[in-house]
Length: 131
Image 1 (cartoon, helix red, strand yellow):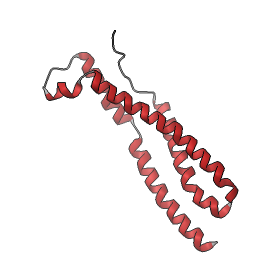
Image 2 (cartoon, one colour; image 1 turned 90 degrees about the vertical axis):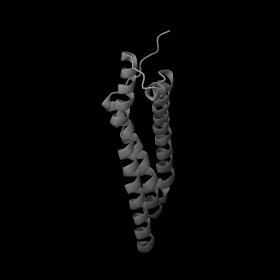
Image 3 (tube, rainbow, N blue to C red; image 1 turned 30 degrees about the horizontal axis):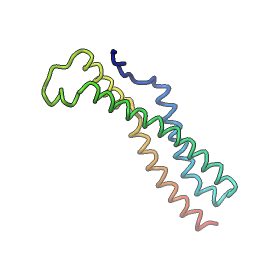
Image 4 (cartoon, rainbow, N blue to C red; image 1 turned 180 degrees about the vertical axis):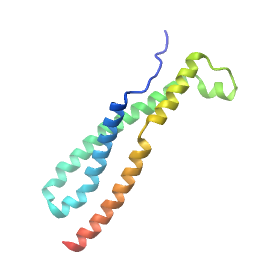
């Protein structure tokens, strides 16, 4: 049985999941503001954040598993250690892995989550003193 060659998903899917992760990050960080402004919004916003992260991290998990499966199925680490010649199929998998990592927006997602966390802390401190 021939292995199914891995491939990256279209940019629209990548951007869609990036925005979902961003939405969830914002939801969790804005809860602290809603506690001061409109406490009745805290619970719905929390659920929106949790459900968004549920879908987002399930997607990220599947990408991670797909990458690891490709590395294992094609024995790429062993071939690289042995300085073995890569077949055309092996090269296609290496291109998939590198393309997948390059296309991924996870670094931007982590950076934005970091900035939003700082802003949430600052916002809470400001609202704590104002209200």
